[in-house]
Amino acid sequence: MKQVKIIPCLDIKDGRVVKGVKFVNLRDARDPVEAAQAYCREGADELVFLDIFATVENRKTRLEWVKRVCEVVTIPFAVGGGISSIKDMEALIKLGVDKISINTSAVKTPELIKEAARQFGSERLVVAIDGRKNPPGSNLPRLEVVVKSGTEPTGMDIASWAKQVEELGGGEILLTGKDADGTKKGYDLEMTRAVAEAVAIPVTASGGAGKLEHLYQAVTEGKAAAVLAASIFHFGEISIPEAKRYLKEKGIPVKI
Image 1 (tube, one colour):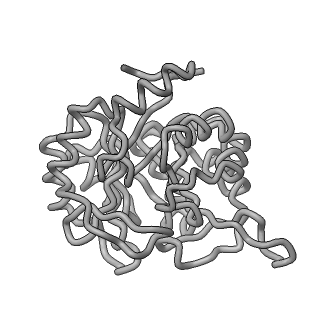
Image 2 (cartoon, helix red, strand yellow):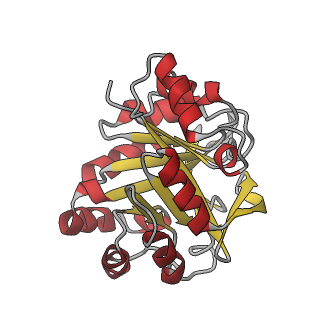
């Protein structure tokens, strides 16, 4: 098993880090620059920055917010939210962003994945996938892709879309279970495993971490290559070193 990455996520709204439950009821968490500096010091493996209302508000990523974090971050830094063209990606890479994360735009224009991989390399392209569970008999996929911050269903099966993402050149998948997000009841292990088993590229589990055991389950049961969390880190419930020590003691390889 390769080293498992621990990744804090900065969900940004109005220039502040926020955190909600199931993509709604957002509350203020902290300043993004202060958060980025703290996570770099604590030994986070990467940092993800999501301008969560960019697509919903039909606008581009706020570059001034990204720039402030870019100036202090010392670990690989991925940015997503409102990115819908190669030009958008170029602007972010010019600022110093290491990886680009696309979600809604990838579903709407799959060719963008291929073009981005060709221009910047698959290793710099993260395709974020948000999913929800549908009840039996709904005539919808059991695990369905949703877009626009979870507000718009697509009718697409999540594992099939993940396979397509890989075929088109996506370097990794950031998978968030909408129903689990912010609940602190654990990652959606069924969804995580379905995607991880469908592709050979790394899958990062996101949405639902509430205790150390959840991180372990995402790796062992969900087959995730990395675990992303927000609430537990932002509000000081669990520290990055604590998470790494726990996983190491459980036999999971991590960078200490």
